[in-house]
Amino acid sequence: SITCVVPHGARQPLFGTNPIAFAAPRAGGEPIVFDLATSAIAHGDVQIAAREGRLLPAGMGVDCDGQPTEEPRAILEGGALLPFGGHKGSALSMMVELLAAGLTGGNFSFEFDWSKHPGAQTPWTGQLLIVIDPDKGSGQSFAQRSEELVRQLHGAGQERLPGDRRYSERAQSMVHGISIAQADLERLQALTGH
Image (cartoon, rainbow, N blue to C red; front, side, top):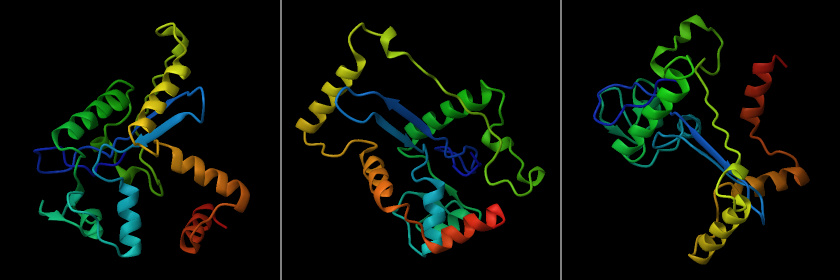
């Protein structure tokens, strides 16, 4: 992803938001699916907040002088995002850079040059997928073990699992169609030339 995250303890952005995604089957329901940015907030959420004129929660980013800010425009216009969880999120972000760029031969976030790709909406960086066949694991049914963990999570009071909101929204969209703001629709139409 684009260079927009200051590593913990650094003074300038070097990492992208460097997302991590995960999916696992369940015996009694939809698969467990989630993705997360290793930044304190996703870059797209900062863009949305800026368009809507909303402030961000504290601890999400810094302005161009490295000072904490809740103003999304200050982050987008020369500032940077912070990693989630301080040094721990920064270490995960470094791991993603090494695996998705160093290992694959793709660009590190800091190596991508937007000026060489006019009109690009996303940077050319590496991607890495690690796929594990759960049948090669413990010999027990992984989907059943996943379901047991879900039962325990519900029993411990966790009502919503990662991915539940998206499954619910997908079901609603199948019935009522996809809801999209007029401004977003116009931007998509402009991108497609319609």
